[in-house]
Length: 477
Image (cartoon, rainbow, N blue to C red; front, side, top):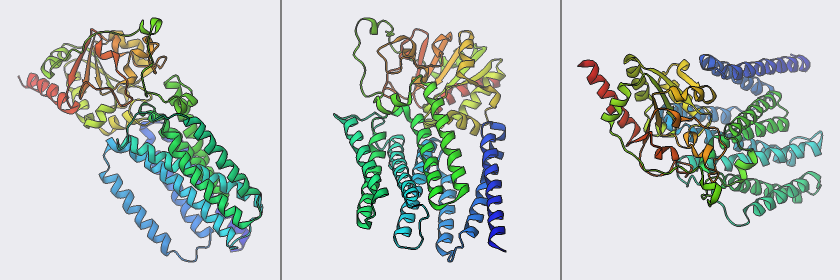
């Protein structure tokens, strides 16, 4: 086969793979087609990998085979044993590995050129892209690792601020780009090597320090942002090694991540800059005068599983509002069972989903889909809020900020102005909570102190099983 024909076939295969990526991504937007979309995207990636291996005239497949076997084993173990509660941490870790892979590709290409293995056609452009690949990959890697540690609760979920933090970050950014400019323009190999080491270190530190001041309540935005960065890093790596399909795939991941980040920020009525630099949840704002007018005063009123059953048994309109507490207790299957019991008892049940509920985008949708909750029962925030006053009972399972009335009433609250699910407008609210502490973001939920709210303390799964058992006793009686 002559080189021209080979090049045409390779690029044609890349185009097919790219089309499959786009189709798969489109199908992921609907639950009914998500599985098929995932499969189609996987086929596209398989085509891209196989064609790339032939394209690059691989001399020895030994280490490639080792990598494939090791990656397959790790992937199977993760798919089999990682619980759904750990999906946010898993996503953060995968984003980090994507960034690390791009960083390694950038470094490998630099040393390949430095060793004389290949000649760069456009030295300034190639050096610039290598710098950007390493920079974005390094920030993504350590930023994702820090996010992973927060989500796994190895580190505090609170934002960590220190005096002069923004100045330090600004200085790191300046030093990173100065070393990058030196790397691009210098003709001295030793100076270029020193500049490479400098911006590698600076990028790794930046990833850590940029995520440090972001509070746990903003983790869905952090996850989507890091996902976008991993795509941009992959796109840059595609330019580095001259691989078209990697450029396309990286662009798709990067742009979809940017769009998702914008959606998350809109759902919280905050700008991305506010999410990144405000230090959300570090300390309550001092309140005085007008700031205290919207604060809800009251006391927590506990309720038992038996009394909760009595309330729900008489209800005809019920809305269930899940949060991270449902994930922690693995209560999604019991929630589905409870919803079926309520429907058999004559109630109409809906699930209200806030865009930033949980610790990653779509977290609640994934958990409820795992429990086979009908997708038609899931209602978005904007659709459920007008119906909320007609709800007999709202069951809040481990959600905090997304149902906190302080967002609409208390001007001293950090979440003031954030759109919420108006659970407090239901006739009765039953909140399931493990204890009397604050949520992951560190904010008190003023919903708990409202006169129509009752607190069902304990593990959500165990509490709901008590309610379900009461319904079963009623049915058998």
